[in-house]
Amino acid sequence: MTQGVEMQDNKPPVQSTVSLCYYTSTLEKALRPYFELDQVLKCDSYIQSMFRVLKLSKTMEIQKTEVAKNPETDDTIETTKQNQSEEEVEHCDEDELRSLLLSDIGDLPLSPPSATQVNFVSYFITDFTKPGHDQYIYRHANGLCVIGLAPTHIAFKDEGGITNIDFNVGKSDRSVLKVSGKRKKNAMRSESNTALCKVSTAKDSYIVRCCVKGSLLEVNERLIKQPQLLNSSADREGYIAIIMPTRPADWTKNKESLITLEEYKAKKEVSL
Image 1 (cartoon, rainbow, N blue to C red):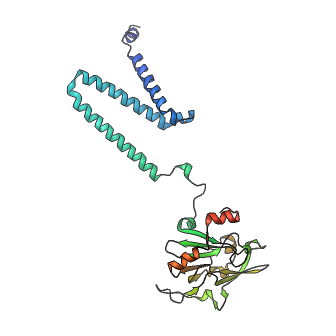
Image 2: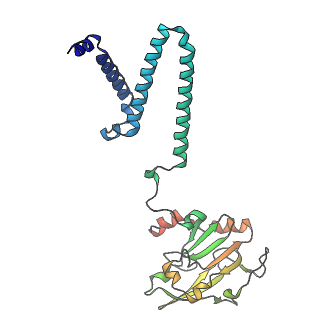
Image 3: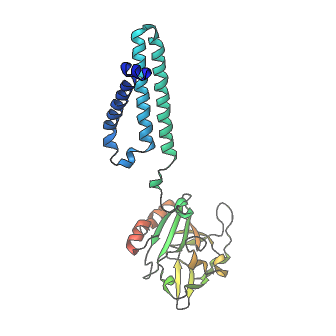
């Protein structure tokens, strides 16, 4: 009882409680515009910030008292403040670096981008020479263009899909090309409307074009034995050919007749 009475007379708990409430109220008013919801007010960062400021404020009060009593401690207090400031700056730098390296989970897409989306820029040409003849051109940073059938190509609408592919069109069989060396010897020169192959369904057959003026480097020979790849993964294992534009000017001219992925999705009303 005597101890309790002495504590009431000295009133240190009351002063501590008043100071704590004062700093808590002041901090909450300062941070209120940035935290609208009660749930956010209870987040770890808010609580950690509150206690950090309270601890700093309490330390400053103690330091002021010590300076008033003993001016010789002023240099020590200044050193302590400088160390605290350096720690706070270092902590801020770490938070900034972490925010740059680690994406906010809310900004991440629902599904990760494919290798095609990461490594290539997607272009499309629609109704090329005939209605429904839609093709894609995936351009790599090194200039190579991958040619294939777009998801809206008319051949995919036939029952059963594509059942056969023939590279023996025009005056030569594209599948027997053997390109070699840095100069791409034996590469076939192509125009944008040059026939590349013929794909067949149970109902009809369709000519696929090169779409790009340049050198035909290779065709996907795997499709000869596995034409079903065109139905299941036309944008990956089911690509048809690879073409290198002859000159940058040729690609610039070709690009004028192509549309971007977003334009293609808007025009064909599809989601990829």
